[in-house]
Length: 144
Image (cartoon, rainbow, N blue to C red; front, side, top):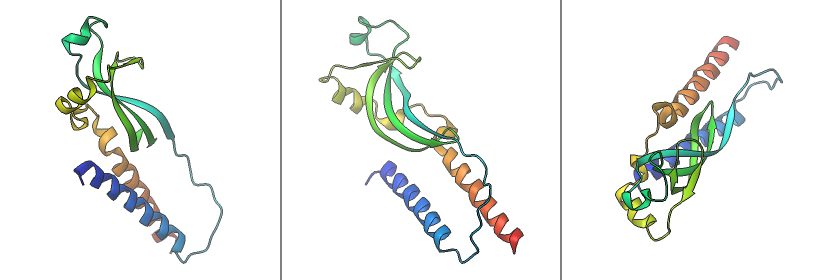
């Protein structure tokens, strides 16, 4: 089990335990306004490296190697990314598939761990979950 799989398993276990804790809390159930949560889904591209010279003849200089992943996020912080594959990316939501015979070699040279992801994109969900946890504890203590 690699570190990314372990991290994803930890996140799933954390949210599962939070969900179970919410269901089993022995308090009164009241319907009330909870606020707004922005949930975002779709494709996201993570730059990895410049396009190799052998592919540069077909595409101009602004194209790069990138991973295209499907994602689920809250407040633009990725909760889960899946179905990642290497593509050529122009930086403007336009991508081109790479020749299938080149992909294994390129993925070996440029693994997903080298993808350029922002700090918020990598760890923002921890901040969102922490804020929710602190807010929930504050509400429970304020109601007591």
